[in-house]
Length: 109
Length: 365
Image 1 (spheres, rainbow over the protein chains, first blue to last red):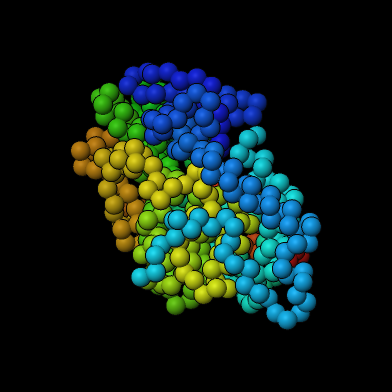
Image 2 (image 1 turned 45 degrees about the vertical axis):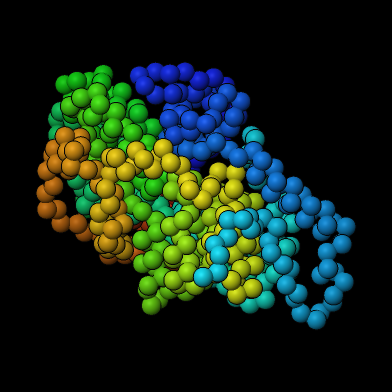
């Protein structure tokens, strides 16, 4: 029931005081109500649940974390991470997780 | 599909599993709240991929599963009236009530219709002015804005034949209840990404601080969940207890303001009974007084129904993460998706259904 799917807005229209979009999900398109995402327009991706868009996909954030994961992948493959140089003396703290959004962490109280 | 396929990338999943293996030094118990997340974990075998020190238990984030049996009985009663058309999300049709379910009512000629969106219920009401159309509005905070919008529009149009039978739940009170329980073993939570898309994640600050427990808002694809698990383990290993957001492409701290606004206009918080768990105070939403004309409970009255659960069903324990579905003696024997004893075997997000589909006895558990 909390399943929501990302789709691309192809066009928008106003009807009866609400804003609707024709949104493409892979091979199909559906009519989606856009009232909760006034900032989303044609060409944007939105997350859709039961016929309503709930958020506009933050393309920058998605790209940023994806790049970090890719880098992790490259380091793994090249064996350049510190763990490979330390055999058996216990796990070192690998540091903050690359995907952590430090700016959103709650301050220590 | 963009923003979906990338998060199902096997190579990234392997990278995250390898990272996790390096971080973990001792056992941890983690819980994902949302049934949609449970299904992904089972479907992609994530619970078997991750280091065995990490135990995943499943939470009560399945609104179909936790809808009170009395609500099902009430929906069946209302839908049995000759002038009523009941419109519902598909999952609800096979959920067992005390004696029957909506599917059997439909099979017997009852006017029960399945809808993908609550807007379809409005369309049915407009097209059939002589029928009383009742929408079974079930969900967590993810679905509340849509359900609120539908009632708001019905009121604005003066659609007198439309009403909603509300079964809405809130996540933070359920987490609090789990943390307060003496039986609780959960040390970190994956918060539901689409609930938080609507509500933001400020509500979890207090829980994290008070109970000293890390909470990470997670998405629904395998890479999302592996990232979220990794972030939780990093916190636990470092002795931190904070709220973090993995699902940054959809979730921001404040959440969706227009969605929260319509929820606030149409709904108010109330106590609510969770099937199998009992009443959790201030954990539900009901329609405000000014929408009484569209509140099916008020339109049709609430009767005292006796609700009987099959004695064998242990869904209460499954929903609180105290038992796994495979530990139920009836699992896959007397309780199957075709002949369910309880809701978690029926719902597309139910833990029992997930185990039935992706994991039979004889696996890791």
